[in-house]
Every structure is written in structure tokens, then in C-alpha cells.
Length: 424
Length: 93
Image 1 (cartoon, rainbow over the protein chains, first blue to last red):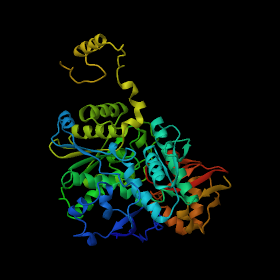
Image 2 (cartoon, helix red, strand yellow):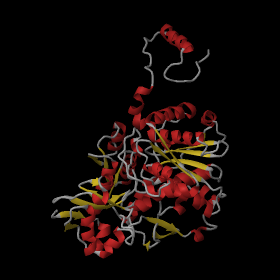
Image 3 (cartoon, rainbow over the protein chains, first blue to last red):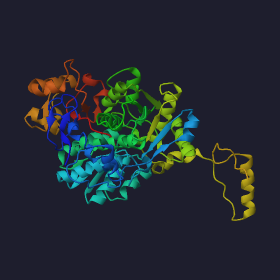
Image 4 (cartoon, rainbow over the protein chains, first blue to last red):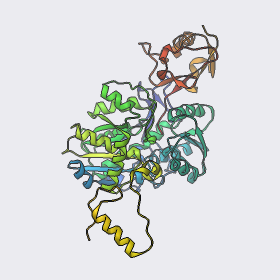
């Protein structure tokens, strides 16, 4: 059984049946899944959720599927880390990291949206799935499609990091590299979805796909002991995640599963691609598209489809935005690694660097709960970190040579690590 | 003066233009071409433009693969053989 009511235009409210549909016929606004929250009362409870599987499907009553989950049965329920070392470094009281760099099976938040989109693709009877991607989505579509026995096409910008390319190819999709940036890929995919009867997850399955992103927010609330962080910093690329984390928080509040602490959401972008943050800072509702120039390629989307809603939700919640330079992004990647043992990709560095700026500027108070959303894994983008560390010593397999190294370490910290020297 | 700009219509918008995939139009700027399109199909016009005569924020307009917001927006000049695409915004990657 399902609590799904209909598809509904986010702008004019026109309702449509559950079908592969992207936009409203009346005003071209995006359609979104609407649920019957009244019918959920007393049925969707903390206990009902806690008795579900240890995956994002524990929230299936709040997801748009009709039958049983069929894809991504192990996806989600990633760690929420109480980041005390990092909190100390930043001078804040209570800091959490929601760590989707450990998501299963492809180590990014995209395993959430794809689990829902491909379950829906099977329900609709598609045999071919695809996506426009900056890398992470392609990994997830290719992996889940392989496991589900679906044919997949992944379309990516031609200049992605090698790890991002191999990480998709291994699953056997048809990969097409497009000359241009993500926004060019996106436009082409929109036309492909129009022409071929395929399930392009972020085009014609978009309303279902985006609902999967809510599970990132549901998990934060449940893992915090059924309460919400007061401040949540979310990376913004196409603008799917932030509005859905905010929607998840509002749904938990509506169902009485958490108290309403008026949670605020904050947008994080790279300086080289910050159309949404630029609009927030200028007090505009509409953003101006940009040509991306940043090392944070996974969030290099200059014309974010849901950017309008990001600006809207950030403002409505009382949040704000910040952008980080490439240098600040790399420093933040290293800071998260050396304080919490988490290796994120530049997108995650962006989020942390922006959280730090929002704390420094006083936008986020130091004595309230803060959650930083980490959405991707650094092992996919090792090239960007290559010049960040000192050369490691090479020695003969002799203890005497090793002793010399230990002696040197005692004198000078090595490997770029600012940690104090090891004491014997 | 230009002759024969090709307008590519996505599926979602085709019901408003008698199900045509492409439409030939004339005009020397995006504004003129879209103006001639929407005067032929007023239902599309109501949806494509706001009351302030701005393009619907959920539709992106491209001239030969470039978003007009990187060009001269509605004043972008067009010449014969140019392609103008209307593309609904889609989700991220």
C-alpha cells in the first residue's frame, strides 16, 4: 500500500496521475509527488520506521513507490558522525557530519535518488535507463542498472576525472562523453528523453528521482534521536538535494516525528560556479546562469534546474549561502580527513569550507546544532589532491634507515600533516 | 532581416503547437521569432511568457546550443539557418 496521492505542479497545483512526467502542461513548472499525510497519521511512526530495513527503504511510506522496493536494497542509512574533533577545530559546540561518502554501492548521495528512480522505472516497465551526470550519478545509475538487469546509457561531460569515468565503465553501461559542460549534457539528455522511450532518471523520472533525496534528511532526523539540527549546510549543484532535505524535515515535523525547531538550510557552492549563492547574496529570486570553472566538478552546474527552489527554501528557512575558492575547498578536504578520518571529494570540501565561512561570519551561531552534508567520496577524485602532499620517503628495507626517518619526523612534521610529531 | 529560423519544440510543449516537432519562423532576433511563434499559437504564448513579457523561468531558450542568457537574451540576433531550441529545465547530476 502507498500513501502517494498524485503528481502536483509546484507552481499552480494542477494534479496529474502517477506517470513519467516532468513538467506541468499549464505553466511548465516542475511536478512533485504529493502524499496523503492525513492517512499517514498513526501509521507512519517512529516505531514503524525503526522496524524497517537498515536502508533508505525504511522510509518507503514517504517515497513514491507502489510495490516492493526493487533497487538499492542496501543504499542509505549512512553514518551520521558526531564530529567532535572538527567541532573543536571550528570552535562550535555540536557538529555532525552526514557522511554519504560511505553510501552503498557507489559512495555518493546519488545511490538514494537512483534506488527510487530505478524501482520506479521497473514499475513503469522501462527496459533502458540513463542519466546526464557529472560522474556520481552515472556511477550509481550504471551500478544499480547492472544489478537490476536494466540496460543503461550514461552521458557525461568529456573532461571528467579518470576515477569518475572508470567508476562507471566497470558496470558496463553505454557511456557517451559530450563535448561541453554539464549544462550542455543536460540539454542533450532532455532532447534524448524526448526522442527515445527511455527512463532518463533526472529528466522524465525526475519527480520520483528527487524524492529519494529526502532520505538524506530523514536519516539525519532519526539518527540525531528524532530531532533536527538547527542549521544544515548542503552543497548545491542542480538543486535537488537542498529542497528535498528541507522537505524531509518539514515532513518529519508534519507527522509529529520531531519537534519543529525551525530548521535552517544553507547553500554551499564553489566560487567558480555559484549562481544560487550569488542570487541569495544579492537578494534575488532568480539566479543568473554561469559557465563553471572549479575543481569541484561534481557540483559544477551553472544552470541549476531547481536553483529557484533552493533560493526560495534557503530564504524561507532563514538560512543563507556561501561560496568557497578552489584553495579553500582543498584545505577543507584535508581538514575533514585529518580531524574525522573522512575523505570526501571537492564537493564535500566545498560544503565544509562554506560551513566554516558561515560560522566565521556569525550567520551560524557557534552554540547551536550544525550538520554538514557530505555527499561524495574523495577516492574518486584523487588527482585533485596529488600536489597537496610532500613526497613520501623511499628507503631500503633496513631498520637503520627507518630509524633515520623516525628521527626526522621527531624534528619536522612531514607529509603535509600539521599534527604534532610522534613521541616515542 | 532573416528567413527560416528553425524552432525545436520539446514534447511537453507540442500539444500547444499542433504536435509539431519543429516550426519554421522568421525574424531577426529571438524576441521577433518567438513573437511570431506565439502570435500563431497564443496558448503557447501565455505559457512561454510572463505578464512582464519575460521568458517562463522553467524554460531555457538556446540559439545553436548556447543559452540566450549568455548571449543578448531576447535581443540575440538570428540569421537564416539558426536553430532555436526550447528546453524545459531538468534535474542535476
